[in-house]
Image (cartoon, rainbow, N blue to C red; front, side, top):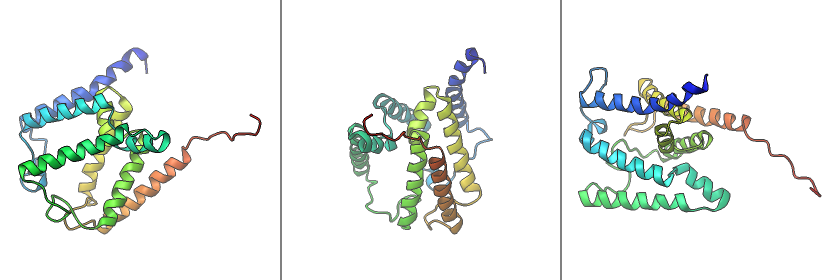
Length: 210
């Protein structure tokens, strides 16, 4: 592709987000809106937009990445991004306590279930995929907003995957994780692991006297 035209690709995520915002505001008929359940529980659009811009700005300014926090700690013992976990936890806890939404445990939480093994394996798959992609889902959204086309395609993949998971009934529900969802998680871990192994960086061995 001609280098003079590649810079305009960076504007596509912003234009797509603006198009989606307008569609939501005017309740476009090509969008499906949940009328009941957790999907219908959301703040007004303008409040959501303001909160999202604020959270996105803070995440961009701090270079926040949930998987990157563990990476930096393991590789160079840097705890900067890990400390953000504590800030998020304390903020969420304080807000839930203040508004009376705090509920300890998994019982009666929206979409929560008690199949803890599959909670762990599902998030393990998420972390493994985020590590290979170079950033957690939040980081991919921030990078897409900066005009990173690789991150933009990653975000599109997440959206397509979420839609497909509900279409073929592999998404979890309060009833738990169905057998086809369990199979999808195991297959995802296997495929992602193979990709990581095949495309791993080869480190040259250190020879004596070098």
